[in-house]
Image 1 (cartoon, rainbow, N blue to C red):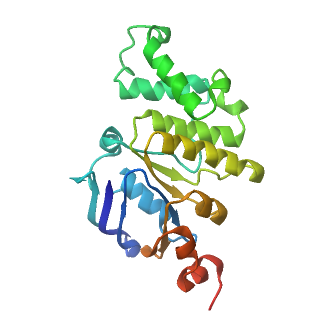
Image 2 (cartoon, helix red, strand yellow):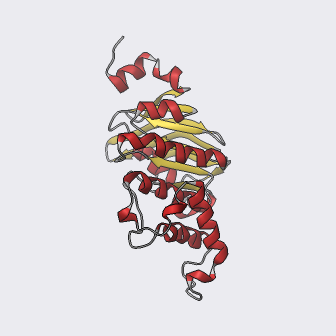
Image 3 (cartoon, rainbow, N blue to C red):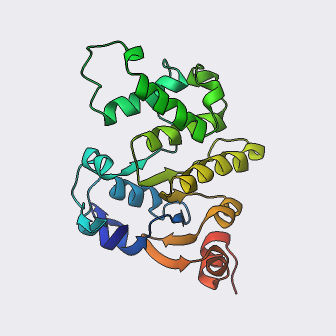
Length: 247
């Protein structure tokens, strides 16, 4: 599905991503882990098109998207959320998702009919909320939601963009410890139900171990380990970089 080849990103004289190479297969959930400053968010920004690489290649379903705009990547099926949720705070939960669908169907700038006229889009938005387990709060405004529900809504909005590949930047950051697994259960169940692929940036190793098919470990911009969570976490270099444990 997604192929990254010899990707390099320099900011001035600083090399943040250094010849990164990996693949993400269809239906696969991959976690991207590494110490602070390893380049994780930069790598996700490169994949989503928010910044452009110095060199290298990114392919999606065999098509070169290395220099595509974020909009073109969204149209091709790549969507992302952000560590800090980006919600329309003056719109209801339903309208947040419905706005994404209006964008997908090219209705944003039409302005011909009132929202209630688009019954099929409204029904689709409700079905998406139901997939993510938040249909019962569809009439609430985001400021009244828990951090966990905000994260779930943020992911549901990315999902509404007809994504085949989701990039999730710390989907449990700011969420109460007791709610983290509930949030991940909801998000991962929806992803698996729709047979999507996903890359997750996450610092919580329990979540990484429980929800990932594969783990990529990034250190100083390089992918130093790639494999099943248990196997990767047992590698001496990974233990040292992530946990400060030396052999």
